[in-house]
Image (tube, rainbow, N blue to C red):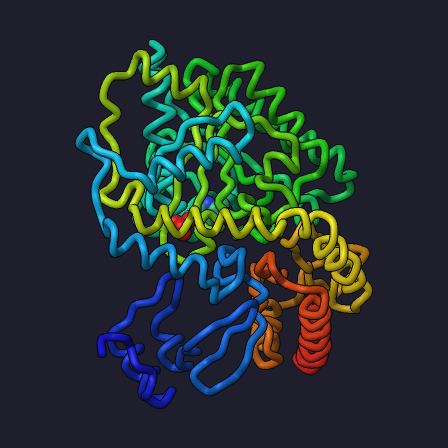
Length: 463
Ligand SMILES: *Cc1c(COP(=O)(O)O)cnc(C)c1O
């Protein structure tokens, strides 16, 4: 009887949690006063907490449970692999069948010039690997001065020292002495928040050209790479104007800068293609992946590496002094393979592109008519609602940023829906297996939470 029996009352679990468990990205004092919500089990797109409440998971965990909860194929694959070979390393001139199969599979699924895979345990580790790898690549090619990595404000690339440094979250930089050297941040293509009177198309060009300005300022001979998410996820589902990515790619090519496209959220079907790079017609040199790779069933990530970069450092680089104990963990690889098989066999990504994506988009865009919503935007199965007291001016509320978002988030939970807030926007990223009926439920619950939020905001005099 080693499994964690859930026979304790919620209040006891909460007290134990408060006593011993430090949560990520959390004000522990405030949480301990309020008490955590304890999730006990899940199936499909639904969660159940220890009080028996059924909740529709509009965030797929943390943007990761793409094939939904309770998939026996993944569970069985992990179980089988545990019995066969629960662990072996890939450092000392050794490999194992699950790593080999997954590396080959990913090379087939990825855009055709990406045929090499470096395994890691998470998205953050993937981005730490990116920093080491692009600098090692340029040094191997005889250009050791190319070290600077240009990234974006309000981008998210993980929470390790390098991941958080690449990210542009000022609250993260403020703790722990970040960013690390030679990572420079430019402005983001967030039209709703920062576009002012410009058209989205003009604004997209302007924000892409910020990359060119920065390259010129520091000298192309000092720049290794530019990194960005196709759609900024944690930054609030910022979908760039259509003019942005073509201009970014022109600039990277012109100045010989590697393009790193962080696919940790967009990868594995989120935008209606296998990768966000396909949705936005981007040709990356490196692609960090994680989350949807295993649908979150076990922690695993990777960096997909182009032939150009891999051949460069394989030919000229000697040892790459980098790796993790759990790089290519066999059980995680087996789970990822089973997950990819489900995505393929059930045509889930095609459904997102042709059925559920367009269906959700139609309903989601109708929420823009709600008096509290300044903008609705969506791509595939990832979307956001910007809350505002004034649709025309896109004005903020007369309260600290995030106040109204938090109110709405709490009403969502009460209504039986997980929707996350970023600032005063509400975001969704449901499991890709969500059905049309479940989409109806999601949108109805979101609508109800918006109504309740509107009442509360009025009562507080914020609108
Ligand atoms: C979540 C995320 C990461 C970090 O992944 P972890 O597995 O949490 O380390 C990196 N990049 C993006 C775009 C992410 O959304």
